[in-house]
Length: 340
Ligand SMILES: *Cc1c(COP(=O)(O)O)cnc(C)c1O
Image (cartoon, rainbow, N blue to C red; front, side, top):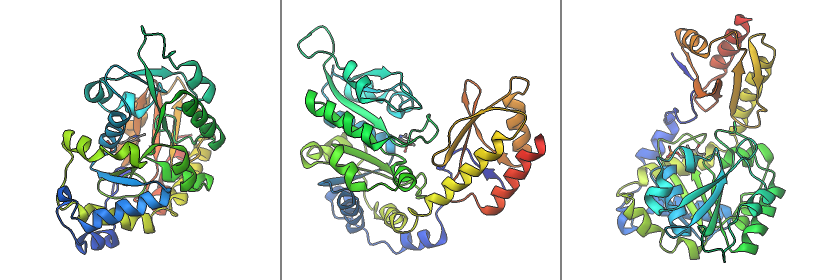
């Protein structure tokens, strides 16, 4: 059996989730007649205290739709230089919305209210693009699962309100942050205009992301999803997996966090490790000492049936998830200890 720690997207549905999928009542969601999709959307909207939610096949599509809903071509959004919307969505910000990104040199993928304020182009200076949106990520992906300080997010909200900017949260792993920091989803609903939440990461469904938002912003969301090619039919089968995950897979995220912390602690003790980034949720990022080659290390691990990922610039990444069992965890820690 292979131990796949490349990402939390590699999980397969559990037997109970498969049963929920099989039992789902479905309809044609393009007509909005799929009761299970409607239930999932209502469930998430009410959990966050927001007006509307819409089911998307992927997180990238949900983020791209949100950006389209918030902006007009030629405008500019502000995000961290490591943001998923800038780095990993195929240039969709410019392709789909004709919008540019003002990149902020943040810390572990997170930016501050002061940085946002400094980077807003003066609206009466007609030479520069009009700043209209701020995109945050929580937890951060490239930042190693780091969680924002809620107080800083509130300050960013104030800056956005003062300057009339929209505020979108790429919450692909928001539930990891909510569990790690014991935060209330409703607080996030009060702060953000739109939030995307992946069901296919730590929550363990085969696919799906839900975009949640205020009535005003979400008014045109179905049309934008259609434009992006995302109208789906009997997708209630996948929404059923999402409902199941929200009911059974949220609290257990703390187990993934615990395992990631243990991996981080073991790594810190190894003579071949140069650095381990702070581990707050389910992602561990570390580097090897210069005498060791990442390629050789990864190849050796893969011969031991352990897969991890390289992020460039010498950074290696491990992500814990539902399918990473206690037994695998023990074997992985023993393997790490055996190199020293
Ligand atoms: C995974 C991820 C997404 C969405 O990715 P898809 O593969 O399109 O579902 C968006 N943002 C972040 C931070 C992610 O980690």
